[in-house]
Amino acid sequence: MLMATLQVKRVPDEMHAALKQRAQEEGPSMSELVTRMLRRDLALPSVTRWLEAVPPAEPPDRQVDIEQLMDDVREEQT
Image (cartoon, rainbow, N blue to C red; front, side, top):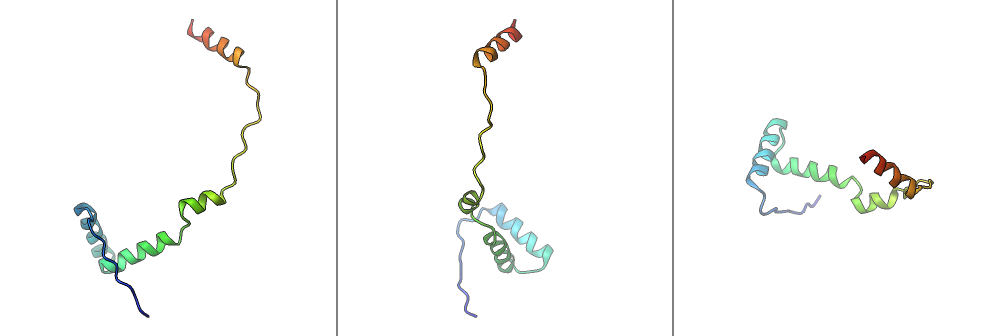
């Protein structure tokens, strides 16, 4: 199976160190670990697709008496 090469530039030092430590703890090479992480992340839907799948929320069906609410707030402040 042919595989492409991906080079990631400008990885922060602390992220690189954490990745290296994780690979040492779990056993695979850094490349294998990153491939697993990418595979796991790409198996999830994008935020856009996820939001498209979530039905829109229905607004609550309630009437608010603004005048009464303002009177109640004023009363609490006195």
